[in-house]
Image 1 (cartoon, protein in one colour):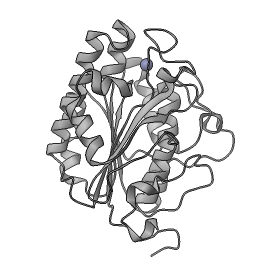
Image 2: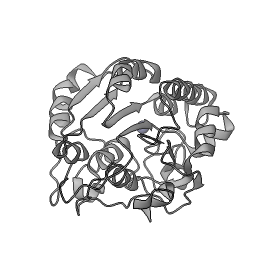
Image 3: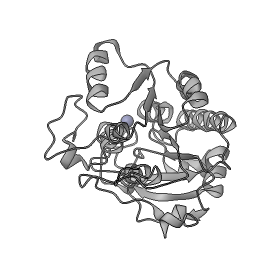
Length: 283
Ligand SMILES: [Zn+2]
């Protein structure tokens, strides 16, 4: 075993990004699957996303572990970034240890497909699929991997709540319906997984909130825009409240740690060790 790999019971991570899901929407719209996963796992409804609180920055941070000032994506402008300092994409760190990464999201607009493919190659994503519109479509396109990919990282990006938030406003009835759709998809995802199995770690989180500074957006330092839910579940996870000191950048650090891999210096976050208190390696 190489020096930078420890033994860990976690063999794969299933990561779901619930785009634009505000923590207070969970109770308001009775998102039962999210609420039950939070209760049974390690969770917080008071975590903070990166700044600025927009999807390209947050997704780049999840996929590289680096803060936006390091990975270089700091606006909505879709581009190949110029990082400030070395960046070590999560999927490349996994690939160095022969662990695969697959990524599933709704269909990318036709004119964006070329750049999306280039970015996925830069990030080292072994498999990149953009298909359909809603959470269920993305879940369907990931279903084969959920069944057969037993190692590494399976990542899904569900956009329903964010889209409804931009069109109708955060916490509007339409936003609520979209959040319920994501909740239903989470229930269907759960049925395909064995949450008592320590080999699978499930992480669900939002990339930002919304409706803080303005009703139909989320790009501000307002707490309603920056505060996100983060949930961890699986057989290796101890149910606990993770508190307010959790950052979105702790998620990629936790993924590396849970898979037993060392964390490059460019990773801004720290592993959420309290979630794994029963594992000897977390002591
Ligand atoms: Zn948005």
